[in-house]
Length: 253
Ligand SMILES: [Fe+2]
Image (cartoon, rainbow, N blue to C red; front, top):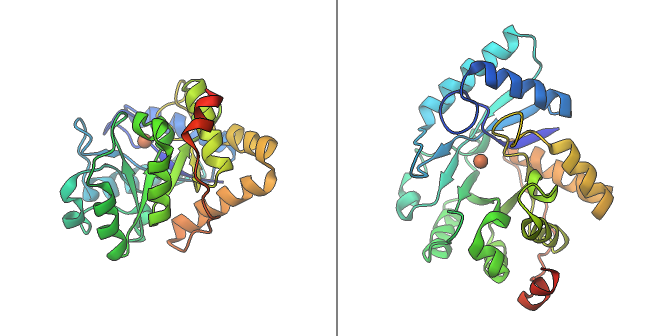
């Protein structure tokens, strides 16, 4: 199993504070049946700056240590980038997921979606980069206005929901919205976004079990195949998205 979103690198953001914590997280991932994780440290989120070169160095070091410890987990490089207006000028300097030059993790703040987002995504797509919006279910504006997310997906962006959101770790509204995103084919990946081994852990196995139970095993397989394709830099298979109507969403809440 591949987990495409994690904060397993030691001491560089709000994930693992040190190498021992990274190794504990690696053991947790292996217990879940995860073989590969993409390390996606925060970048330009107002608190953390993690440049490509230092992430690549840290990934190399952690893989070396994992081998020494006999832990059969492979860490791949990535970056969780807070959206900013001029990022299209920096695409070469930013770190695409597993360095394939194709998929970039884009994070919004928890409350807003900038009004330049459509334009930025268009410019990225023209240059051959695919924006992958991380945890849209945790953004207030997208929660209240699901049609905006639909527009981004229609435009060619992909989305990744967080395993804990589906499991109810962030409350009922977030869980309901996550279920809606899955049932309306508005999301393409599920990942742990693990930060530790307690409150924000690698709960991917539980999430896939939940997806199989609620949506059928073919949906779980769909997400797993997409995670593999993303790490390979190959095309993602996606169903045609279906808009979520506000009225219907309000009824669920
Ligand atoms: Fe994250």
